[in-house]
Image 1 (spheres, one colour):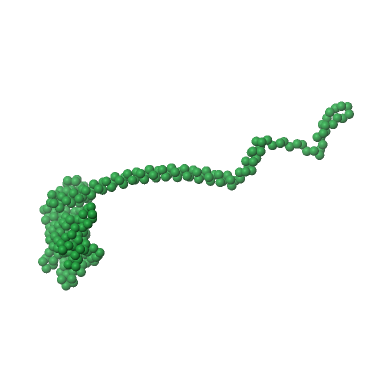
Image 2 (image 1 turned 180 degrees about the vertical axis):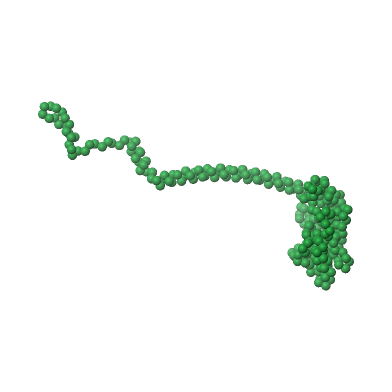
Length: 265
């Protein structure tokens, strides 16, 4: 664009068609907006969103971890409480067995004393061995007994229903059962004292002389008529067969209690 002074002194503008008009200049603020749009691509925005999501996830995980720690503390408290209850339970069971073994109380009376539901005790079994003694509670070591022992116990007469109590033995490490009795002397099942709810098996043999020091389990089972016949046949055949033991308890025979002992002199 040129300024010319025509004749007569009037001032006018002359626009040169070859010269384009001036473009407006960018302000600093416009430059910053343009640079922001140029720098942040769609991939950058996606990355930023992923980072934000990860931060949120970490925050949630932290909250969950705090909740888990709180749950663990509550669980630890509950376990401690239950352990204390179990110790009290064990002391009660030990006391109950001691009282029965000494003849101070029978199973039915015990249920009345500790208010068992329906007169039954889940702390005291309906059929139990009271002698020989159980392994020491503090060490777990079984007591040592002679080669022939008398086994005694208690019974809730209501569970018998015409069935018989038998003693069988097991040798540690041997999977066979050895029914106790003497077919020639016509004794096998334990002798019952229904009035006092006690039973006795007068002669239980713990192996042979070579079994000195071995561990035996003395087991009391409740047997119906069919199971009793199996035991009687074993005892009758024993003198010829050598009393080899039976591989499993017969159908109709149910184990109720066992006590581990060591065979001594």
